[in-house]
Image 1 (cartoon, helix red, strand yellow):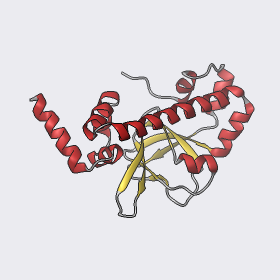
Image 2 (tube, rainbow, N blue to C red):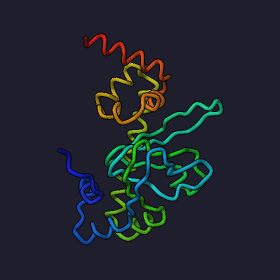
Image 3 (spheres, rainbow, N blue to C red):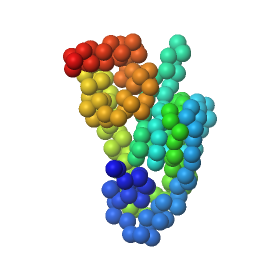
Image 4 (cartoon, rainbow, N blue to C red):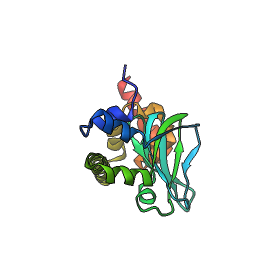
Length: 196
């Protein structure tokens, strides 16, 4: 069984903190419980926090003029989520960030994150490392969307994150992969037939 996620265990994967530094880091976060379909961030309001998922599933999405929603980011245990453009620049958000399951999250405010980073170079290093990882992940995502077929994108998601298909509704997975729900449904049916 997987150990229960904690910010202390997570941050130690990236930087070596002593117990006092770890306690100071963790004290900047506040635990929040959100219900399924509850919004954390909405367009036109500044994203004051970024969130670390302890338990649950959260999605970030935008709504186009044709009312089509497009999933930008998904987050499950030990993943981060926010409207990063809004959070980093403290300007109005363009995305919705919503819980897909009842979720337990740790939130940190923009101001508290800045204070942490200014107080200890190790905290600055940690936030830089997760920002670099997020940037690399987003680049890979853009490249796969430009160079892979819809079926290949689905296969890659299931290979790397097998539980995603069970945690998020099919329309969310389809939107995240840049295809219609009907097209994803056809891909899944073909895969089931080929296994049988």
